[in-house]
Image 1 (cartoon, one colour):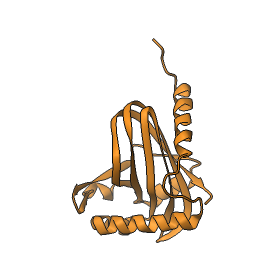
Image 2 (tube, one colour):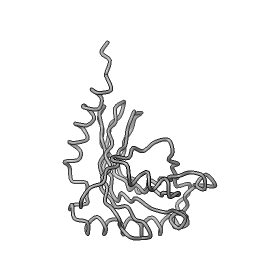
Image 3 (spheres, helix red, strand yellow):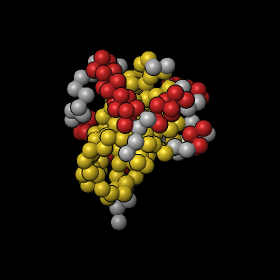
Image 4 (cartoon, helix red, strand yellow):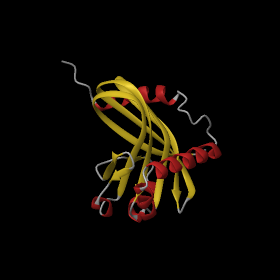
Length: 186
């Protein structure tokens, strides 16, 4: 029986992530103006389709918006997207989101992803880390009806709230995955 080491896993999934990163993920440009335009459109969509998201944004000290994340997998998989961090409604940095996964999976999908930083400490940790990894301190909100997010009172005690919406495509499976956010120059 061949056991996959952590290093082998990272090398294999990192290679898959690099292949996926080489694909055009719809943003089409590395320029900050193009990313900002996509972020504006994504936030407009989010606020118009899920009015509760605006209330969440009003309580947040910062918002990371990934307008388009492309994810694909066949055993090994990966995801990639670029976006902007906004504080007080102004873009302060640009970030790339990379994810590697391993497990039973097949398919591809695209979606938008927004992180709401609910505390100054969470935002500062994100901005000062060399490569922030999504962990257990994130609470995901989901669409419960066509126009509402369910985040209830947990958002007042959760340092980071994530919203995933606008899914297109299908990815089936159970995987082990890691997501890393890295500051980029756009």
